Amino acid sequence: MRADRFAQRRARLLALVASEGLGGLIVTHVPNVRYLTGFTGTAGLVLLLPQDTVFLSDFRYRTQAEAELGDEVRVEIAPADVWERLWRVLAGYPGVERVGFEAQKVTVADAERFTRVNGRTRFQPVRDLVERLRLSKDADEVAAIRAAGRLASEALAATLPCVRVGQRERDVAARLEAELRTGGSEWHPFPTIVASGPRSALPHARTGDRVIERGDWLLLDFGAQVDGYCADVTRTVVVGRPADQRQRMVYQLVREAQLAARQRVRPGMTGREADALARGLLEARGLGDAFGHSLGHGVGLEVHEGPRLSRLNQDPLPEGAVVTIEPGAYFPGWGGVRLEDDVWLGPGGPELLTDGDVELRELL
Ligand code: ZN
Ligand code: ZN
Image 1 (cartoon, rainbow, N blue to C red):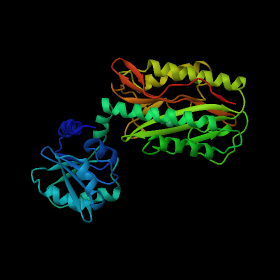
Image 2: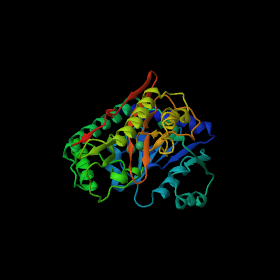
Image 3: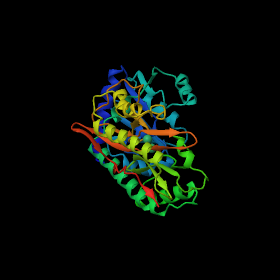
Image 4: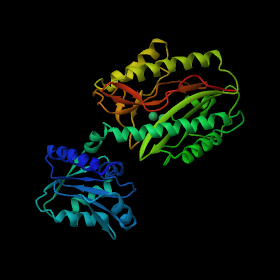
């Protein structure tokens, strides 16, 4: 990613910070630090001021920070307590009186430090300032998610032909994760879900020891990560024999709902309206109660971020957001189907970033 991208993001954030009546912002949420500076490590914080961007971390990250951050960011490596160093740095800017911090990302223990600091600085909790900027993805971000989506497809394509009746869920997950890693995924952005038979009815099942039986649903929900950006994909397949009539019926209804939503979702519609694209179809076919979660979520540097495609979200979806479309239908004791793809809400309409291949697959 080009260095000027980060400078542009910081400039846009500073405008938001000023509009909140603040003289600066302490950014502690690691994905936000990465978004603003390009730092790929896991420990560091940023003090963003109109006159300076200061990155603070400990000695483990000195070399990495100096290599990744570019000339415009001042790097401060603290020998011990990064927060103590932060107070010292802040004391060098006597004109800065009110500084924001990320209310949802600071621990109570760290927040207590604000009350102990002497001097004129006042600290004010703020919410979602960086997250607001992150909603709309630029071309580089979309390209990274698309690349992650491609890795996810390739890993699944390499895994499914090896699935057999008699294997455990964890055997399948191990294979899939190995394919993701060797294919180039930086990490698994969340624990891979492989849920078989009746366990596929648990929307957030954990991969377990259950042995796959003939005729089982096998639900695979997994992610890939490229340049820090995630793709999030779910496929549901039948193992060991062709789908029976009920399986086929449920699958086709979920598929129809997924296709409708991913083709009709648009920037500007509310999260609730987007959710209704799939929910309305499933409700009309009597599957409304079986679809107990929301349609989707934003995906980017974090696998779950804004905006929500949910009945509870009355805000318009921003142009440039990348969201998942993942309707499902779950029947306790029988099983469930979920189909998930990622789309970019471009000005001309939705664009798929994952393969979108939701034909019913029977692994015979
Ligand atoms: Zn998922
Ligand atoms: Zn998801």
